[in-house]
Image 1 (cartoon, rainbow, N blue to C red):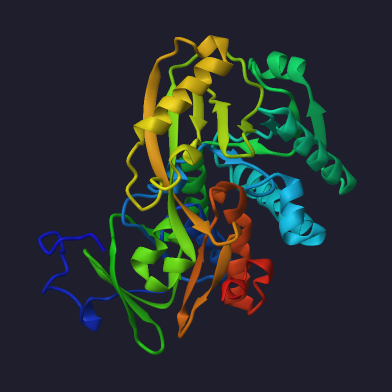
Image 2 (spheres, one colour):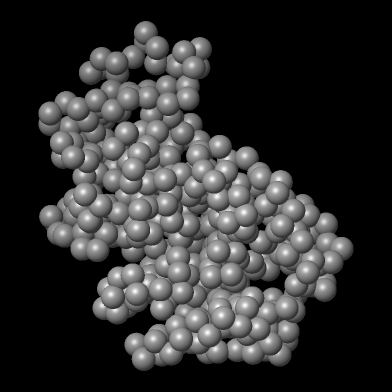
Length: 392
């Protein structure tokens, strides 16, 4: 909690039953996971409210690169090594579902304009060793029927306007979007009531439900969902060793002529860049340069990393050698212990559920994982590989 006593509008003014705003389900966190959870819960006809300490998508959901990618945080070969072939493929399929459902339900049926495009993404090799790993990943993926194409330096120069890469892989199913427009659209379709600029001060168990105190109001709900990702440990200490707040850095240039056919990853998925619809070029990553410093919930730009991002663009793109940088920012991601999202209910608090730990891939996973959480809550189904019980 970061509200001072002077800013606490409920201090000595609220807290009785008569003052409570009553809802069936209160979702704390109006980012991609919170809005998606509200969307899936709407089918039960419940009175759902979305609450956020800022505005909608004010956290990582409005500070990311807008990639809607399939898979996870590592090359496919590493996912297979970590999780086994079957689970790695299941996780990939779930991320494919995530993208397809956004395309069909939100953009298609819902009519949400979020600059969605399904043009694939590239993973580029900065070294011959990484190129061999990418080729191995592509071979494993092709065996599973995942559409991929290995590309060479000439293809990269022609379709991406880039130089200095040894080759790469094109993942055909991936997409991109305007993430804030996407989250706003999902929240709008959910029908949930939005309470912005409400920072949670305290969770209070009532036995048959919960009371949630913010600096501006008091809410009473049968169930609470914590969709707070990187900020989760600020709301409840149980998350302190489960979801780690991790800072990511992004910059955006002035508009340049079209040159990049699809979004790209490089350096083992640590760094990423894309050209936006208005011609601006976005790049993020390079957290590995100051890994120990890029922790915590302060979304302050790191100038060392921003210098490296800018130097990368000028080195690899002739058209960006003199391009002006128009935007610099940072965002707080929630990294889980094993890189996989987690859902469940708090130990000893059966009326408090949670969703988080997307490890930098919330746009590519949260809509699908939120459906898992909704099914846990409404139908008593298993959370499967996303169950937080795997972390102890």
